[in-house]
Amino acid sequence: MSDVPKSVDIHEEGPREGFQISVKPIATTEKVKLIEALAESGVKQIDSVALVDPKRVPGWADADDVARLIRRRPGVRYTGLWLNYRGLERAAALPLDIIGVIRITASETFSVRNTNRTIAQTIDEQRKWLGFYRERNIPLEWGYIMTAFGCNYEGDIAPEKVKAMVTQLVTLADEFGYPLPGVVLADTVGMGTPQKVQRVIGMIRETWPNLQLGTHLHDTRGTGLANAWAALSLGVHQFDTTVGGLGGCPFASSKGAPGNICTEDFVYMCEEMGIATGIDLERLIECARLAETIVGHPLSGKVMKAGTRPKSLAA
Image 1: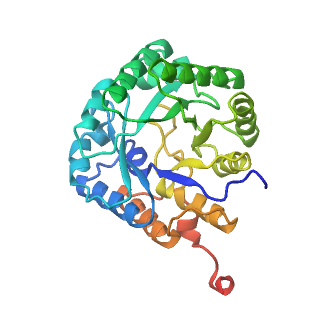
Image 2: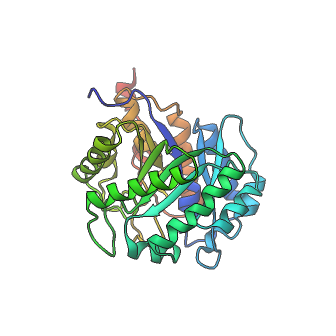
């Protein structure tokens, strides 16, 4: 347990992840309602909208309206997702917090399916983003590697390939005079296992011992929290999660498959082990129930249904 962090940083991605794949149309006001409720629970960063092509992701056709309607809570960062330079420009014109990130994918096939770009084309696109950040003095915070633990088109991804992708991220950042503070490893299609997570993280740590690591884990095949524990046990302290287990990639998950690891389940696990999250779990459970009402179908979260401690053990 010596490497387990004393606290974790949780980036809430439920609104952006969940509403991008919702079959039922979600009213703009309902999206805003969930985002504002999450901010009241103690979450410090909320990925609120996806600035993407509405023809491909119709659930976020109202992204600009949602961003403008949010009543911002002090101390909370409200972010958005973009996959191209046009999306970045849209984000910068909205009342959103622009977080300096660059993103590449370990799977060539998934890269083309997800963004219509090869890995080489994606790297060229990231140079445009880095130029944008440098011109506006926006710090670079994270490099993301999608499909770091497997791809639904190509199968297993070798840890050595992920390591090579980290090298590319570090090199890209260096081109523009940025140190790369950290890398987020994304299990985009939920093929990760604890062993894979530990193998990849261990390999990266050996080469870049000072590089911060985060994870973006999906629970598609039920291994999400086990993978989170594997990362925690190696000192990882930053986790992307979604309230109620909302979400799933529209180009990766089967219909009905769970989304990301569930925020309130992860918070419960951490707090029970003495790992501070800074989040009010009871309020977060209320948010999960609200999310379930908004999307109109049962969500995969467990703690929202079971509660926290039984009353007989709470004293």
